View 1: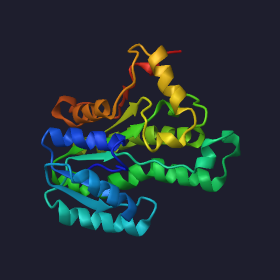
View 2: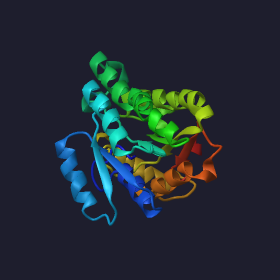
View 3: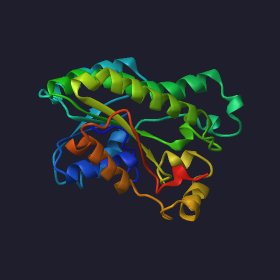
Length: 249
């Protein structure tokens, strides 16, 4: 199951394509009818059956319906969950973090961080039925370093990464692994809401050990690895796919 596909440039779409390439049976989610229209257009070009489910992590009724629909759609369980969901009000990504309002803070943390725990709880019965599985979330190094104009999203990603470690501990005995990919800057719909994305892309080309930007395909290949038996003893880990940018001072 892959969440968070907005359009053809989405990191989640790059991950979905990688799973399809490797022969996975895929379920994708959409937040509302507008996103479903975009998703259906992408799936028109896919030469494989793909199922879709409504999922709005900010709505309790949607979460309950999602869990019930998942049971009916995948009675034998699912093996993989990709969490690629994040949101913050654009005004909270500008100016000073100091000026973040309570409502904006709660929304960013709820959608971008707590949704991983809630979604994991929803798919947990399905994964145990399948005998274990792999959960992969998307993060960014703004969780540990100050990135101008990332603000409350950096705090949300820090909470997400901490959640990954606690979930990895909780679920390890059931052979459910929980990891994250920290991707370098990519031109996506989400990135368009953050000022300075062009500068970040240029910085990678200028300063990273591998002087080139990554693609959504690179992230997809990393997700396949983390979800495979090759990574069966890797959990609670943040895998950087950023041409090595995170090691630079």
